[in-house]
Image 1 (cartoon, rainbow, N blue to C red):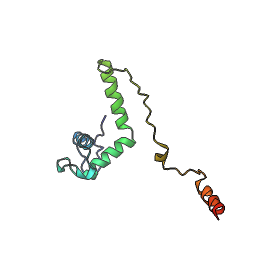
Image 2: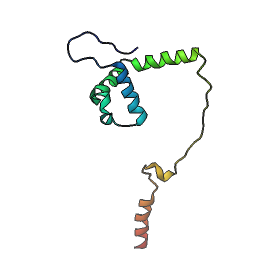
Image 3: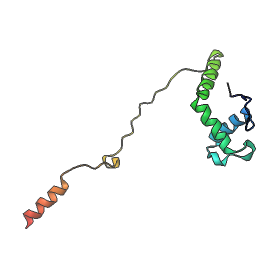
Image 4: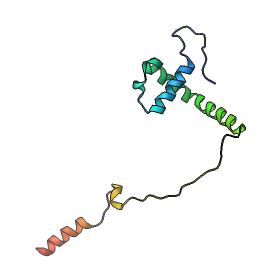
Length: 114
């Protein structure tokens, strides 16, 4: 399922297993691409692999294949839990301006006082 060398001239083809391990390592640790250990090679190469595999649908095919294999073995529990908890914010937390008439009332009260 992973990309294979095309045989074209140019830069040497990176090892697919190393690239996938680097991508998984990056997400597992929650680090930036630039902080990948040097053992995985240049971070730009790892990012390029990840980007290309995301654009051409390789990650989707890998997920579908692994999910189908796990389901065939009976390892996937398809039960679903839905949480309907609602978290409401206070009206002042919305950061939206509201016309309450307060400014107009201040002007009118100033005229009445004079």
